[in-house]
Length: 268
Ligand SMILES: [Mg+2]
Figure (cartoon, rainbow, N blue to C red):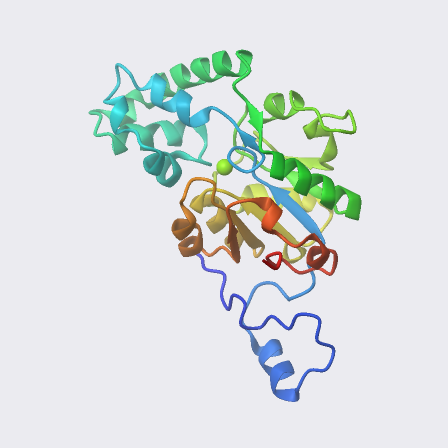
């Protein structure tokens, strides 16, 4: 696991006068990103922007392959979320003790995809209101923003969500690397590095909003700051994975601090 280090202890806030000792510590700090240099954002989709029915589809598709009642949210978050479809399928089967997981993964993944498409058609995709407010606030700041989900269904889901401006959620992002065929999924940093590249921003100037520990690990490996979004009482796993900040709602992030390049919690 890659770890982002020195969370918070070298946060200088708005202080203009730094002692020599503080400056020296800042220069020597072995962290991957500098305080106050953020200027672009990369978003995971499922669990951050959208309450999409992936978990439900994985669970319902398990019938006939394994004991679906053993497929808990904790298993979904730890072993399946954020992974490419086939490796997620195998991990889910192994997690519920299904025999022959490697052989059955492709059939299970196909059934999950069919069920997911049915749920999307039924209107089961919902956007998190705090996420829409946050994305709009960053757009108002003029920040470059990307979406980076391994899901091949992310584009269709985001296109179905309308913003107050009338544009779709997908349209607000300057770069979209969702569903790209990459050699490895999260926690490999490839998808986030590709997002930064398409935004024409150095990775060290990006933060990543993620709800899955594997995504936070990928952000750290990409030398980006990780913003953990713990919507399912799973903050500990995101912190362990190396998240700089963990919130339960994106309303808790101070947009005025982001305007200064810093990822901070809004004062209570
Ligand atoms: Mg996610």
